[in-house]
Length: 320
Image (cartoon, rainbow, N blue to C red; front, side, top):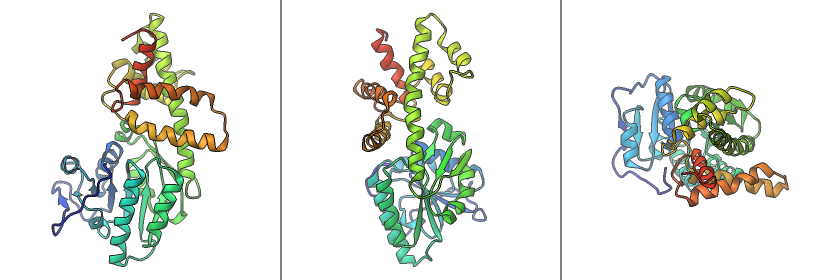
């Protein structure tokens, strides 16, 4: 989802998909239909939810109209028809824009405080999420910080964990939404704990992704079949979730089918690195990963999946 504002000048910008429209079903709004948002909204639709989807991109809205109940080019129009929302956004600017539009719509409708809840699933600084939460609270909308653990490929198969944090009543109200698009959700306490937990998880993801590439390349140089390395090692003591998820991508060299683009991952890495520096936490393994991801960007893999770190190590080893 881009940060450019999209508004509707027609009477209504909701486009219905008659094959999936079921107003007897509970309604949820999904804001941002990118890699994660499209997967979550599709799974929610298949779980029996009446899904209203929003994205700034017309092409994305058209594509998703085949998978969810209704699509819109206006966030404001969704406030009212939906009380529960999930946001999956690329930047703080996008979050603040969406929050402003939702707040204005809620004030016009004079909604009762606490009846509309937004679960913000993006990986963004806690301070920025707090700012958005304050803006929404002034209009009676409760926001919870609920980042996701899992890749885009995992999202398609509902193999996500939600780290939900914030007002307990609001978290509870989103429980059925989370179970409709994720394998599990954890209530991790006060607002912001979700992002803190996500930073811990992503520190490990960053390390395990590079260690996966390193191990597969080592096996190949030893004369082993890379596919067999993934099959045999993945389920053993040396395996990891990233080894299982991204190992096959590295072997098949299909990192052009991104489930997490390097250019987006740079944002996540920057957030983690800043927190480590601010807290004076030594992180030698994470620090060793940074140049590998920077090299992936420099070598033209910005839009590729982070599995492309394999190509970086392969090049360092004198390979392709």
